[in-house]
Length: 310
Image 1 (tube, rainbow, N blue to C red):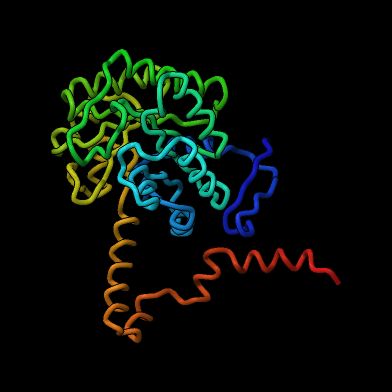
Image 2 (image 1 turned 90 degrees about the vertical axis):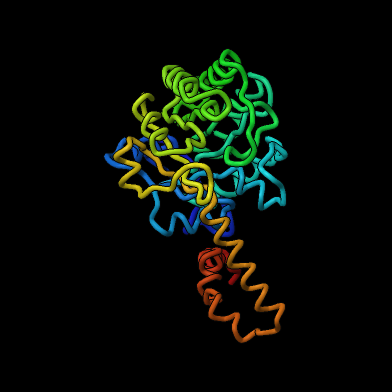
């Protein structure tokens, strides 16, 4: 039994509490993935969206690089620094209980930077970390065509990630992403994914296959767990989870569903406000008491009473 810090609904205003826990976030994630069947993974963009995912009953989430950059007013083109990502992740892990996979991009530099990225994000509470083989600066895999580093450099980058995991964060789940399918060809993507798996990466993620046939070929050719990026209106066909499981996928990630739906809802509310139709706003809103409870006021007030001066 290990000692760890947990937050979530029972924590107060982001206060971390030391408790006895029987498993780490990484082990909890690994246990979830070992269960039969496909796992659905809505991706979060901040601590509040992660809390909603947890409350909806999902087993884990992914801190989307696209969404995290977006809430900072930036495109997903490698503009967020390692420290910005680490700090953003820590807000999520301090206030939620479900395991979080963090987008580690290209590792923010050379092999030694990759090792520091693994150590730093794990220390911030990541249950899993994704490292990819794009050239730097990277970009969203469903936007413009981008390049990948050479096979040898990709292997060196992943080796650094695995070494750091094995030395400092044995519970961590490594998600190995390759964009080689679009940049070079599907055979190269399969080759890279399998070599990453041999090194010790638990989950393989080949970005942006553009047909069901390509998706099936990837699942048939890659060893270990595979992840599908279900980006609505992106390059990859959106299939029902049962169909993805038939193809061989273990994780169905929904990277922008929450961000996109939130943006659309906010735009609709702003149109109503701009028109001065304030009476029409209320049906679009959560009850204020529900919102207070969601962000932790009730828990805060309960704990505050423990320290009232007589």
